[in-house]
Image 1 (spheres, rainbow, N blue to C red):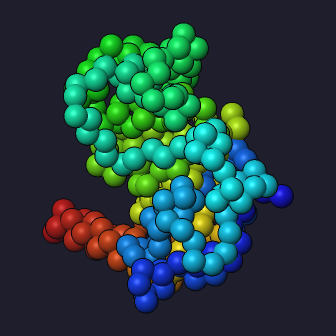
Image 2: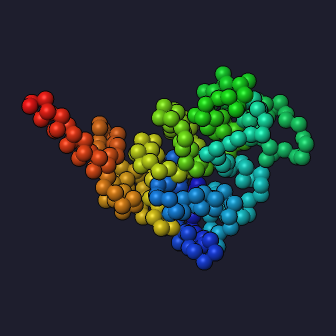
Image 3: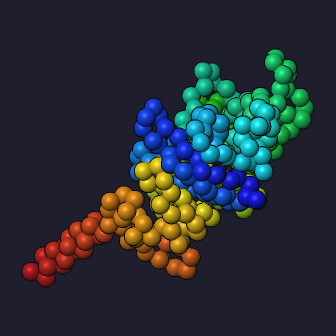
Length: 274
């Protein structure tokens, strides 16, 4: 059985169906990219995986167990949510933000133990941000904040991380650094499920792509097999081609914009020749 298995999952907001009979299997140590237009059900699916919404039919299994049967601590040992935006009420140090990952394991008002602090330090080092430990969280960059939040999830002790558009609002360099870290952690056995609007992210780092359309799964599998011109055309109603730059590395480009660029190049060449 897969590490995460979704069986015949459906959900409605009122009378409006959002997810319809979804089934999906995710193996441990996989980086899964959810792709699809706004309103296709990506965020709703993530909320169902976190147990924040009750499934109206179907079941989610984590490590062979139905999600509703897991206690709060058992869920904390299996999964963690990494938010897109996080604005703390106080200027906590980065170390303190990461240490908060231990909260699901603590009794009310119980102090953090030496082991808690050790886990926080290990998480900071694993994400390569140990040098930020004493910096105010509110004063570091957006990319560094995302890494700190992933470190907090690691400190929690989870093996599965759920991220809703984690690169949204990050500059290009920070997007690349974040994706590299996620891919490295997935290579070490952690599981990531992230939603994204950028098909390139799936092609670059994902081991499994899930294309969602109108509450159903249009296609799922290895990105090089399912992130195709035909599927992206159906998904986004746009003409997108896949360019293989070198072996096992592909990128998407919009065909209409490419044609415009080609025409501009021709006009520029004609002007120089004239």
